[in-house]
Length: 114
Image 1 (cartoon, helix red, strand yellow):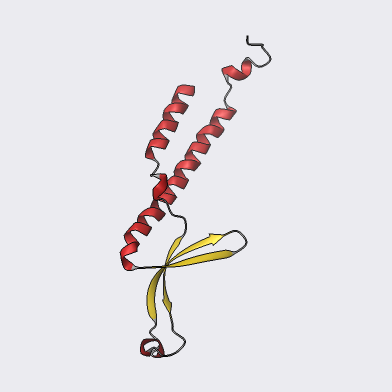
Image 2 (image 1 turned 90 degrees about the horizontal axis):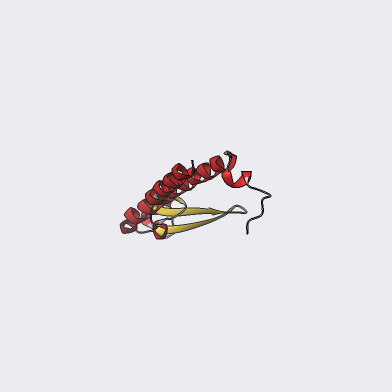
């Protein structure tokens, strides 16, 4: 069974996206309004903008305003993060399964190796 585990792990690792091309967060399309001096905001229309929202422990958020030309990169990196997370979960499942299987190494426990 060890061979199929290593084969499965190799397959999963090979499917993982490049680690340098991942980004955690959510892409939001929101409307912002200036407090005063903007005729567009005075009409109640506001300004549409894309924002990357990232949540941190303790309820903290970071929002990064994005330019339209950054959207393809951000979308790809967010998708890669989700793919990587799914791959890590699958690897963890394989490793858990291996822990539950009887192992030749465990059966040799207590024997001295010289």
